Image (cartoon, one colour):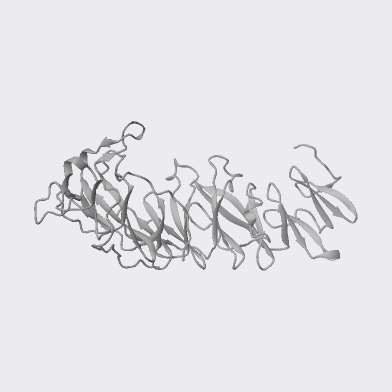
Length: 427
């Protein structure tokens, strides 16, 4: 059958190192012959009907051997004794250039149209994974060479452009995920994964990782910055972030990375301003970054019991408040400087644990426990909104809060004045 173009479907995989030395298929004179030699007819017609393959008839000729068997040779061979093969199939090698996959003695070789060999080791199988038949003469094609022995099967890559070999991978692999200009590969030798660049088949990241994920960053507005840049997240005992060129991006230790959308909703509704949040389960903290990976805080934030970063809870409010590992509360105001989001500290090291943050930046704090439990209301500057502490607090909606003091319930107005309790039915 003619070698047809197909695409390797992208699939995420995990493995647990460097590439190995090249293997090759070893020809054996006693190997069984090709069962069905390619005879120059391919199912390219209507409903898969057979049609003559013009490249085959132009480049290959049939040879009748003395023992009556049929063999095939390159029609344009000019030098040396005539080489015959059990089967020959044309394969595109970039542009209008066509090569030949010639099979004999249990192995395949890659030949030029004149029958001379390319500098490619013998192989068991070949597939065109980028470019090739079905496209309008692509300049470059990527071939996947398969090798099989008693231990199993693996593959390597070779790239051709306009009939010339322009690149070849140094390793052999057992799995691949096609990510456009990148190939995620698992080393056949060490079972760890790395990344190849399709352009030159060189390692962007050596196969040293348990897993590699592709992280699409989400810039807030494609009119301001290029949309959706990609990053590589390597996974082992901890995570690391790299550009798609393989350059390390220094971030504090993390083992999860995600986007939080609309975090700056209070200062700009459209286009939205997402942030990047990393979480470290070891220290039980999270860190905040802009989409350009600029740190928004110089400190980490403790995660909750469910392992979530508290930014999810109050992402649409004008202020961010959290209680640090020392039990002190920090308050930050969200703002824009030009198109860059910022967090500016408005209060620090306040006694009490954050219970909730209300619109306008009022923060409910709790201290003590049991019968000694008390609540306070503080503003964005950390000062008490009203005098004294309260026995209990209830959020009644529309940014209002009711407090219990000396057995009676009161509503707190914006200036801190206590009035008869309100229970708004609408805002």
